[in-house]
Image 1 (cartoon, one colour):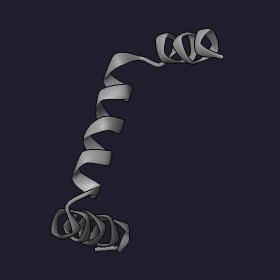
Image 2 (cartoon, rainbow, N blue to C red):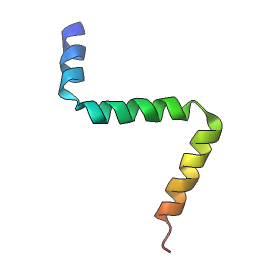
Image 3 (spheres, rainbow, N blue to C red):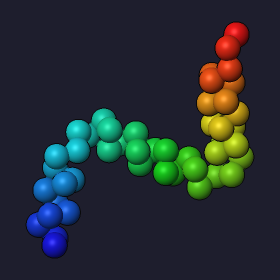
Image 4 (cartoon, helix red, strand yellow):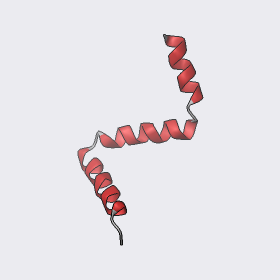
Length: 47
């Protein structure tokens, strides 16, 4: 099982892994998460 986890980790490109980690870290902060949601919602609206 450990081998599988390591293989999956290696197959994930580092930038993607880093972005995922940053997103997880940011989402732990409610205010920042709310801000990100607001930005995403605004980005989804037609100008």
